[in-house]
Length: 287
Ligand code: NAD
Image (cartoon, rainbow, N blue to C red; front, side, top):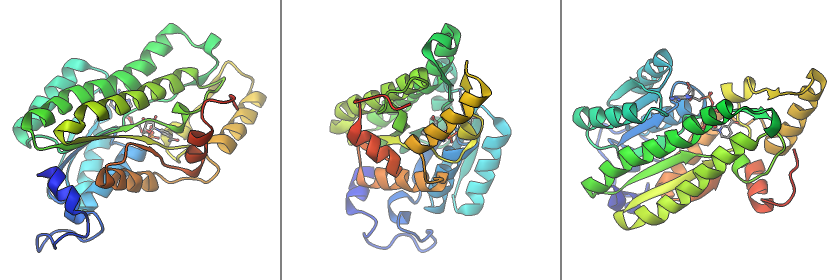
């Protein structure tokens, strides 16, 4: 059903009388969309964009107040139904519980956006095993858990669906200061591509979204560890030149997410910098 409607596309026959207008209302109106990391930044903007298209939205985050605020706003923006759930995506049991609860209360998720993530900027030799574990737990395992628990439900239902995983331009580009982060995102990228191949036969699309630098909390607070303040400033400037010259707003990433689901795109380097890095990928570390 989901796939058939997507194939008819946004220009298909007019939807319900009360459905929100906009390019994606036909495709996403009434769909159940779950976004992780929805309390702020890209996740919140994505939840809002789906709400504006008339989707039912579940905002998941480890930050309870932020998730509730996103759900409240989503309702105001046009979501016929919006709920908030406080979950740490790296906690497998909690994710299993979330999937069961969502299925019982709302039904099977049509579109899953595994977006929750954390940043870490520091040289490999200054990064502890504990820091590695933490970033892989959230950025990789969080996505694995999401794909497993919700992907299984989608497959069992047999009506297709879509999974979006937020990777990063950092997944394409080796860097002296983003080893752990880039490794986690490169893994998300490959996971998405492999899963896409596996789930294609079930009508479930999988997309890896790869933004460059976007204006969110994660970039505002990012710090390179193990370097002097002076070097810190230089590196930040260099990172902006490489990954994000254009002050990219999270709303534009959200637009790219909806477009990618609608067109069933595989890997989406969102920002111009990410496009460039994808093309030049894996040559010389530039940061
Ligand atoms: P953000 O910090 O504004 O949002 C991240 C959200 O994830 C927060 O609400 C946070 O509470 C939540 N979160 C973190 N760990 C969690 C956990 N264990 N369980 C549940 N929720 C958790 O940052 P953002 O930029 O919106 O980041 C969203 C995603 O985009 C991340 O995966 C990030 O790596 C990725 N990304 C960001 C940029 C950028 O420049 N901002 C670029 C490329 C990729």
